[in-house]
Image (cartoon, rainbow, N blue to C red; front, side, top):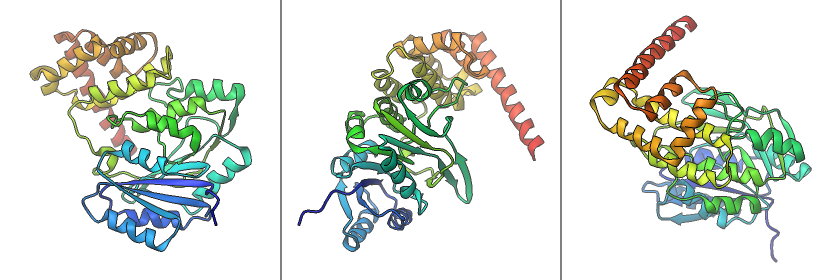
Amino acid sequence: MKQDPPFLSIVVPAYNVENYIRECVDSILSQTFTDFELILVDDGSTDSTGKICDGYAQKDSRIRVLHKENGGLVSARKAGLLKAAGEYAAYVDGDDWIAPDQLTNLCTAARNEDADIVIADFTVAMGNDRKLLTQNMEGGIYTGDKLREELHNCMLSKGEYFSFGLQPSLCSKLFRRRLLLPYQEAVDERIRLGEDAACFYPCALEAKKVVYLKGQHGYFYRMRESSISHAIVRSFYTEEIFLLITHLEKSFVENEQLWAYACYMLDNMLTPHLRFKELFLGKELTLQFKCIASSHIGKNVVEYGKKVRTSSRMKRILKTMETPSLRNRLELYLFCIYEAWQNKKSEKNNV
């Protein structure tokens, strides 16, 4: 007898997470919501992750395991989603876990409101520390003009510098599977910086109804250096940022949100390198500045930065990027020293 497809497909990409995968899978199997299939994608693990996944599949008929060559997070998500059969789909990374009522909260909202996307908040776990992260939006139902004006037009940038309207993480969200699939498939597998953003933001633009469950922090994101999202380590991320922004530009044509987001990304990636050696003795940072400033993306970012309020540091970065003279580099370096001093002073005052 043919079984009806499940309401929800949960895709778990897993690469060398033998120390965490059991906690992840156990948290899913302990959910109060049970109408789901669980697709574990072993992305070419070299430890015992694959065997652990196979062991779970032998014990629970809702679980399927896909073993594939290592291709990265995007590749693993695509492989799992292509095998999914549920009306809705959700991701849980193999080193994370979810609270027992997480799926009930998301699926109840999806079912009651016939939503295309359900968004919840999440918890960042750093050892024993917990940090609650929320979206910069009001909770509730978004549709029609409210969806376009208050969500679509503010997703990448809420207006204040370094302020997302919606966090790009694909986890802690629920998607109508047929809506998500083409946008996940369209993500270039070379994108390993901002891969969630590359899928979520274009997908959200096509949603007709979004429900945001503000204050629901049932997804636990584990911060660790060797996680799949930290698999690449480079001194500069210019190529990765260009790849991501070029991908997003297809959906955000002539939209200044995109240049605000590009500012965030460049600021995040370049700031750790604004030291004396990199600014004055080496050539690589100066070459990166010139490379960015001469590109289509860089020119738009520089023009955006001139018109709107960014951080004082970013203003100086953009100025140096456009003209990497000794004077501009010195001004940027001195400001970074001042900023570091201010941060230390603030930390002492808060002790």
